[in-house]
Length: 322
Image (tube, rainbow, N blue to C red; front, top):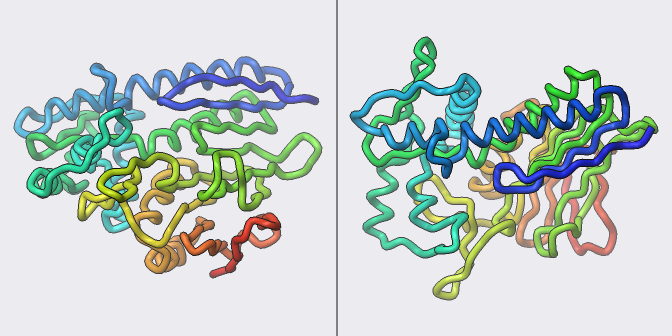
């Protein structure tokens, strides 16, 4: 059997589906496209009628907003990962992100006074959820949430659910670099997922990860950044300071069976730096990780032995940890 490849533009990025050519593969692919469109309509920060925009417009004293169950689920998951990471992951960082102009054509360095005021609005503890009423509210006026660091992971997991519903035995989906594979390849071999070299153009890798039924998500400030006043600022912001992360990590890849978890935790671990990041990974039993430092070191979970292969001639040094 061959594979059907389709591409679409969703959630501000390219989605690639590679599905084994079997009965219902086309139906599965089309349903995934429709599902991604629906998720974006509900969870976009920018679309005026999305659940997120409605919540943000009603922050403070205006009360809770009734939203779609899927959006509620992602917000609940976000709070779960905020607690797990002690706030290193936090969807209420949105006002700070917008002040920096991240993901816009107007990136800038905010003044200290503005940043100090906006940091006061950051805190996942100020998200109110009423599951019975299917509603969400934000405690303070001016607070905003943004699911940009977790929604792609959720969408990827939903795609895998759809593939399974149609009996698909082998598939890969890539939503803007969030990769999840279903089963192995048709020839019985595992899928090979390249790990981006953070010092090189997109598509150049430092190694290959062999995997089945696995999600692989990478975070790093090499993806998007801007230069100002002699410094380079990335798009991942530290939740306590409101400043783009500047530490010893170049990228973090999380490998586990859940794309939404990998999406959130790769971002959180990146903000922690190498020492705290390694300590945190050791406390989470069901994830593996690949951490690349700015000193050309690659820390690799021992659980990935016989699965991750460092490419020759890259100049990076592999270090296994457990």
